[in-house]
Length: 104
Image (cartoon, rainbow, N blue to C red; front, side, top):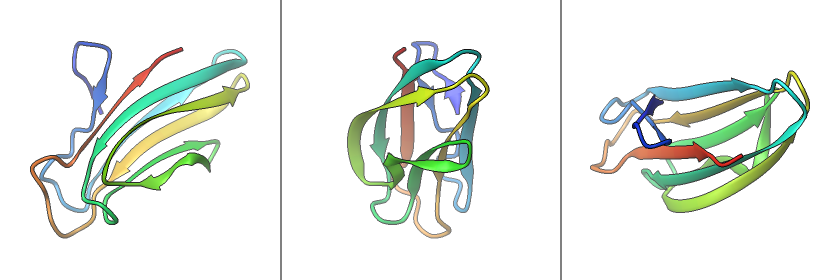
């Protein structure tokens, strides 16, 4: 993911089949993290996932298609959050991106 200069992070694997864009965050204190996301991906094939300490967050586990949403996650100091967008090995579409921002 790359920062777009406006507080959003955009996947940097457009037109790259069999690729993954990912970002890792580490909580420096107990907090609630709010992640707002926008997907325009190949429905049912490319996947957007958020994990905390290796466990998928249920509201953001392998979702795809054209979607907008928000996930609120309670974190403890030291928790590791990984945000990833995995593209399959077949079709690359004009959209094929994920964008997210941190709202907390």
